[in-house]
Length: 357
Ligand SMILES: Cc1cc2nc3c(=O)[nH]c(=O)nc-3n(C[C@H](O)[C@H](O)[C@H](O)COP(=O)(O)OP(=O)(O)OC[C@H]3O[C@@H](n4cnc5c(N)ncnc54)[C@H](O)[C@@H]3O)c2cc1C
Image (cartoon, rainbow, N blue to C red; front, side, top):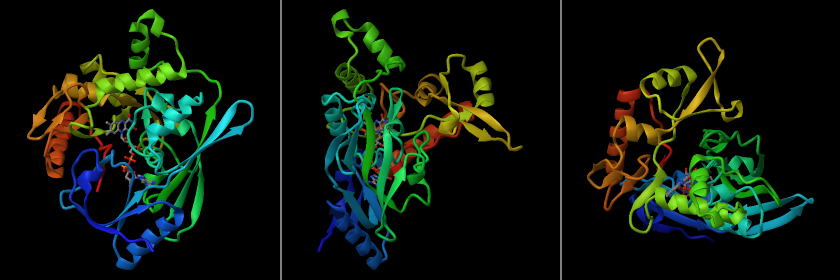
C-alpha cells in the first residue's frame, strides 16, 4: 500500500523555486503505484497533477489542494533495430539530459541538439521539446501512457501524439488524463549532424581550427556551452526557461511587421507543424514563427527588465528569472506586463510556454 506524503512545499520541486504546499504527494516507481495514486485521488474526489522535474511549471502560492503524482518510473534500454538504427526505450521519470548523454556516449544520433534541457523523459513529448533546430518529435516512435480514469495502458504512435510547436495531444482536454510512462525513440547509428541553427553555426565557425570537427560529442558540447550562456544557473536562481512561446503569426502580419522592423527574424512553418491556419473563408494561410526574444530586446527594450524579485534574464529576455524570494503572483505580474507591452508595440498576443498549477 502506497502512502502519500502530505503538505509538501512545491517550491522545492520546481526549478522556478516557487509554489505553496501540495496536500498529497506520491512518488510512483511502477505502473501499479501510478494506478494506486490515481485511485487515491478518485477516492478523495481530488484533482491530480503529474509532476516531472518541475522545470516548465509555475505553481501557485496557495499550492495545490489535490494529489501530486511525481513520476519516478525509471529504466533505459537500447536495442538493435536493423543495421542502421537502434530503438531506445526510456522510463518517463528518467532525467532527460542523462538519457541524451547516454545516447551520445553510445554513438547514437538524433537527440544531440536537445542536450541540456532540464526535466524528465516523460515530459519531453508533452510540449514536444525543441532547441537548436531539433524537436523531439523527430526521434519519437511511440509514447506509452496510462489512462488515469481506467488505469489502462495505451501506446500512442507518433501520429497519435499530434506533435506541433511546443504542443501535442497530451496538452488537449482529451490528452490530459494520460500520464506518460515510457517513450520509445528511433536513433541512428550514423547520421548527418544538424548545425544549421545560427548559434551552432557561429559556434563552430568561431572555434579554433582544431576544435571545429563535427562529431556527436562536439555538437553536444557546443550545445551545452551555448546554453550555459543563454540560461541562468539553476543553482543560484529560479527559472522555468522560456516563459513564453515564440509567437506564430500569419504571413500577412509578419510582412506588415517587417515594414516597421526590417530585422525581425521569422521562420516560415511547415504544414505539419500546424504552419497553416484556415482563415475566415476556410482557406489555408501560411504562418511564420517569430523570435520573441528579439522583439523583447529590440522593440520592447525589456532585456534585463526587473520588477521586484522577478526579472527578464539579461542575456536572453524570453527567460524569466526569480532572483530570490519571488512569488507566483510576482511572476504573473511580470508576465502580464511583458505581454501587454508586446501587444501594444506589435499587436501580437503572446502565449505562456510555462504550465500553471
Ligand atoms: C533552464 C531551462 C531551460 C529550458 N530549455 C528548454 C528548451 O530548450 N526547449 C524546451 O522545449 N524546453 C525547455 N525548458 C522547459 C522544460 O525543461 C521542458 O518543458 C521539460 O520537458 C519539462 O520537463 P519536466 O519533467 O520538468 O516537466 P514538469 O515541469 O514537471 O511538467 C511540465 C508539464 O508536463 C506534464 N507532465 C510531466 N511529466 C508528465 C508525464 N509523465 N505524463 C503526463 N504529463 C506530464 C506536467 O503535468 C506539466 O503540465 C527549459 C527549462 C529550463 C528551466
